[in-house]
Length: 277
Image (tube, rainbow, N blue to C red):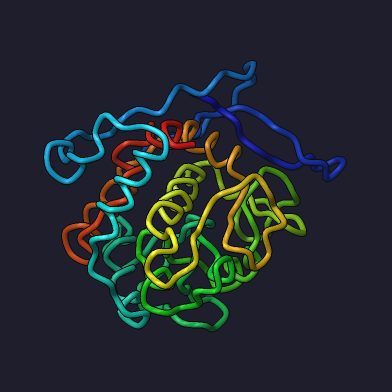
């Protein structure tokens, strides 16, 4: 498993790297150690429970055939309204240690479910695939798809804006482990894989055949309002380095069972990222 951790030198203000595990359980303790870089283990399936049913038409395929098959499978979904997203996120992102709170994606903060809104100190609905990247806004469809909508602090959400994802930048105040520059955003280590799998879900779900733009990943961080999101090479690395957590898997189940009745296949089978891209 790759074990990178980012930080900032107090003496120079220059970003430095130490080493720690990226994928941790809620009870894990972060211990900084100095070790040589380790190659990320290849992504492996987290469950095969749906292979004989939900994914039966995708099993054994690779490349464009796998992507096409998954698109057909996950496009069969129940859509939710943008107003309904508020209550849905209170269920999908509930703090496992405090049922009155949600966990914010980038900051990792546990915050009261009642503090949803647009004021300072509130949390709002972060579109991980930035809604301007495809011009879908908050319309029912890609703008309300729970598989890429997460709670986040209003201020941190604004800092991320519509930037592509990449490594690098300056530390984000109030959100330890996050970094940003003029055109990219790097989330904290323990949700890097979450971000990658959400972006790649969107690229498979929305292929331009349902009145929305054909969303695709690329290796750019200057996509602006184009229907692309980057950086693909980094997202693939994050997928391997930060495997699906119990929180992410539980979230997938809630969306499938209660709300949209479709799944993010890259949570169940993160190895499919490499099989397609």
